[in-house]
Image 1 (tube, rainbow over the protein chains, first blue to last red):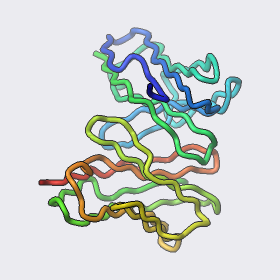
Image 2 (cartoon, rainbow over the protein chains, first blue to last red):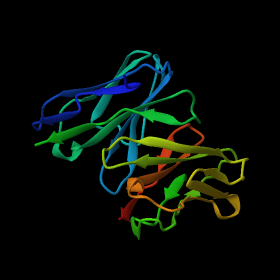
Image 3 (cartoon, chains in turn blue, purple):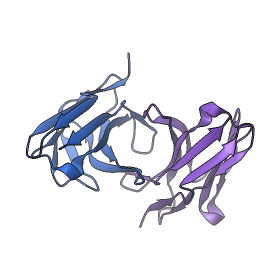
Image 4 (spheres, rainbow over the protein chains, first blue to last red):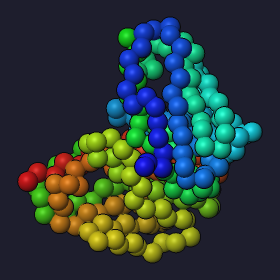
Length: 112
Length: 113
């Protein structure tokens, strides 16, 4: 089984809808991250969490919120989806701030 | 400001050629970490290497090698005798003092048979 899983893998939603993307990990890492990937822009950090009680905004947090339900679970919500939030979303975990991050398979989100 | 630049948007070579992917970074930190990740057409992100700022030794792993030069703020990646399976987007990244990964825009590598 994969160490980092994301659900759903693909989602099409309409403008204005609330949507939640979920991430679970079995690596036992404290640190978890949410990124979005747009063509030609690499990955941009949305939110990150160093432990259950520590959540921080990343580069592009506007329009997003997160919840760290447990060490192993980190959810990303789009409160009111808009078309420019169409992107590939990745969850990642790491064992420390300067260690490599392990990524989930990604969620392809389309907002129409 | 922390920044990672991968100036090569796309590179296309014929199989068995050697190819170098460039990565130039900017940081004010004296201690930092650099990474390379691979994203094959299937879309997942695969960790390749982690290098800290105090270790300037070149690294070789099979057909892959990395050249880290602090004097030029570069961390270049070379694939020797490229293969079609090496076709992917390759990302260079820097961990800043807030432990956030700063990503380059990626280089798309196309290996033609």
